[in-house]
Length: 112
Length: 113
Image 1 (cartoon, rainbow over the protein chains, first blue to last red):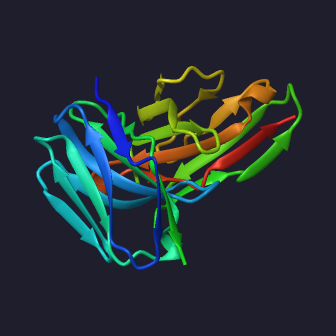
Image 2 (cartoon, rainbow over the protein chains, first blue to last red):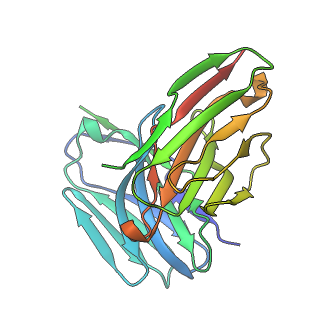
């Protein structure tokens, strides 16, 4: 059974720091992996989608990598800003299914 | 920007009332999902659909029901709301037109008194 884990559960950093959020999954048979951002009381906003054949994706200050063989993905945020404060979730889509498996998220606080 | 819409955004009702949460998407997605999320907690899949006239229960048991008679529309209904139904309900969709990317609506926050 696929399980997705995100470490750390919470993180506080000063503004301007580069930071890495981690996502681990137990079964490498995945179709894709997606990173989301969620602000309090809101829906999830898609940040980056990595297909199983890809190693990384970039959007602005965000870079996500995928290593299927080790069951790991990282989300790198460069030059963090207070506006980056939110909960970040990763989700995998296991091969042969259309039911996404979500991690429990990392709550990020960027201090001004 | 995702073209998936949920109404109402906020709803406060009394116990025993029937409610329908609406979800529509304009991306031509065949797959649609309903998740339930309490504040600060993880997402739980309660219903999903792979296409018209296809609906399945999710991993978390729910007293709600869904229907999918049009591709773009996936409403969720509670026949008799109870305080235990108080939660945020999130609708999502995905499909080949967007390479399998999952998109979410803004959510419907339900409070049952």
